[in-house]
Amino acid sequence: MKRWQLGGFTLVGALTLALASTGTLSAGKEKAEEIPPREGKSETIKLFNGKNLDGWEGYADLWSVKDGVIIARNEKPLKVSTYLFTKGKYTDFRLICSAKLVESEMHSGIALWGKRITAPDKGLNPAKEHGEYTYQGQLVMFPSGWGLYDLYRRAGAINPSQAIRNPAIKAGKQHDWNDMEILAQGNRIRLVVNGKLVLDWRDPDPKLVNEGPIALQLHSNSIPQEIHFKGLELTTFPENKLVTVK
Image 1 (cartoon, rainbow, N blue to C red):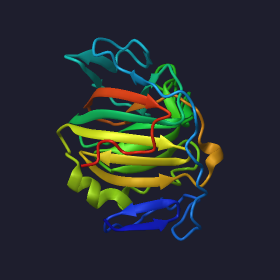
Image 2 (cartoon, one colour):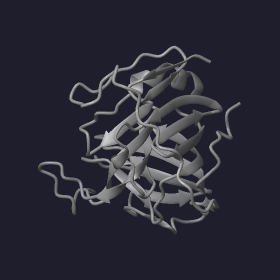
Image 3 (spheres, rainbow, N blue to C red):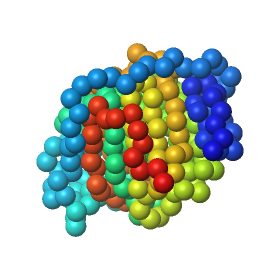
Image 4 (cartoon, helix red, strand yellow):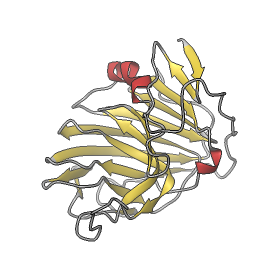
């Protein structure tokens, strides 16, 4: 497997890199500082009990549970992306889960290393327009626009969706279950999709790596959309090893 180091990314396979034009990061910067994995008590937690949303926080009219699956669905337009938050906060972890885009082509994602905020978007009434459960931090996007996005901090400075698009599309499924492993350690995020490593990245600004809730995304959209999540097993302070790569 070929790898290249570029602006904090280890590019996996034959990839190209495209960053948001308004961002502050660019290809060719020095290798990101390597922050080692933090130490702490390692334990495995089932974030989702398969029955209800105990342990989670979000809008009850957008998030529900059926047949052992968390369902995110909007019938009316959403002006801003909204999230389902864990009540617990984490820094170093391994998250193993599955996600399926059921309706629409808009991406979803899992947010980490940040915090819950009220959406600051101009002209939005947060209390009336689902703006009180949004996220400021890092987002792992899937399955449309595979990549990373920095939410409400660096103006989308980190958006390497093109950098992982080819291998992720090859490994991923647009309207079927995608089995994923997110390994977050130090300032490093690795993503495995259906057994294939598609992303290995270090945040070049380690001070932005903070203990925070994990959150599932229902993206802003003008049309109905539905995303399913299941599994959601988390190990705190895990071994520095990918366990689902085939």
